[in-house]
Length: 464
Image 1 (cartoon, rainbow, N blue to C red):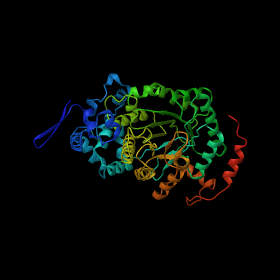
Image 2 (cartoon, rainbow, N blue to C red):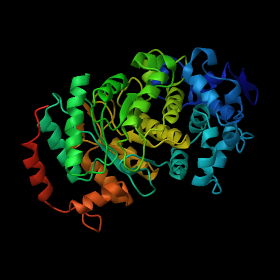
Image 3 (spheres, helix red, strand yellow):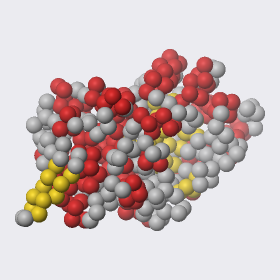
Image 4 (cartoon, helix red, strand yellow):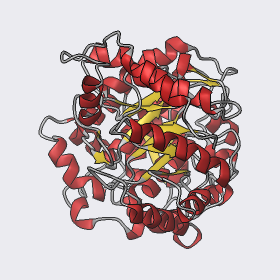
């Protein structure tokens, strides 16, 4: 279908909904690289005005990737809840934005309609929204999940403790875990990206984290960020698997480039659920995404990268994850060039994920060759905290010495909790108080009992 917009004696034309979506997207380097970007600010503004007039029903009738060619499209269409959609089915994209911003649309209202919102609808409304709109609407979206603690409650901000090490040294990893715990990090997950990615190494790291969690009765969960098929092998070998991890994309071809499909995720979820390791809930999946992954795999089907990213959230939603986060600046400046583009993308991704009912977090990060710095990350971190982000990363000194990128530190997470009055997950907060890491007023104590005990226990750790 062709879309036209006439202003005065000039008419603009967009050959398809996919082209209209791409041209309406705020500028970023990845869309410029793929050749789908608007040619001028004027064309972008016209595309946004045209998109605002598109009925939401259009996204159910004009799919961006053919149904028969892509299992993610089939998932989006087949799982669409027509009853939930009925409350907003009469709206255009512009009307939808106004409706979302209205005072009568509360968290409860959004919970009732979210199964009727497709990723493309969420992406479209994001494209015509200002940053403040993305923040205000996200703040309304309350999404809670649980495993050994409860993530996403209003007034709470969780953290992933990321103790990566360039050679997976047990003592180095344990020291980083201790450091993070002393700053109240780790309630979302203690999650390691292994330097050596194979089943044997994954099991070694799983056993290390499980021993620490069990010894100190920490109400949190662990995850080794290995391939989903490796995790299934770990489960079959009797390893202590809490969460199943996988990087996901918004097209079948993207996920094929990652080496999995939806059936693999279903098998892994079933295997993890069978272990029954959760104590307060059974959300067992952890996903990561990022704008540009489909383009980098040449699997974007001519779509803009923000729309591809939103489609990845359909995959996540299918499997009820405990956590999902956009690793927003990790892929590099070819896709998000500078701090401004990274900030915008982080807010878009968080907005779309929350609107679709996901426990959305963000790895507030950049690579060293991007035109960004820690001040940009401070800005995005603060904005996401205001928007009700479920969790952020906690890494020693903001510098991941294994993956070689810059993200947020234990101190950064502590800052945003302090400035916004947020707390860790309630079960984890109780543990911090019981261990005298925090006092009853929510302030950190200088306490040597845990470090001494932890240090002594390290001497007895098996040599995995």
